[in-house]
Image (tube, rainbow, N blue to C red; front, side):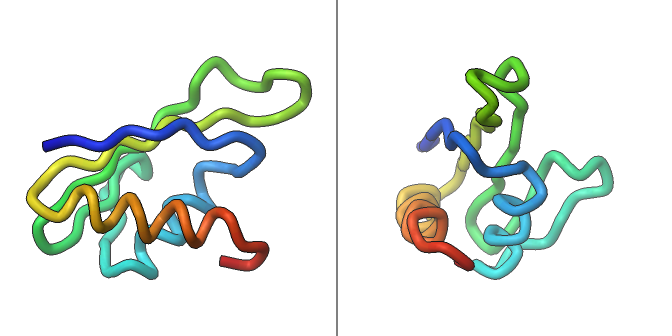
Length: 80
C-alpha cells in the first residue's frame, strides 16, 4: 500500500528531517528515507508555485498509513 501527499510551503529537507524523527534513515541520494516497514520518497513538484515550494511525499510499505498520518501532524505544527 502507498500513501501520497503534496506538501506546500515546506522544504524537502525539513520533511526528510521529520521522517527521520519518525524512525527513518536518510538514503544516500537525499530523496529517500527508510524505516521499519516503510520507505518514503520526496520529489519536487515543479518548483515554486506563487512563491511556495511543493514537495510530493510517497510512503510505501505496511506502515505507510501510520507514518503518513504522523508526518502530516508534524507538518501542521510549527517546529514539528
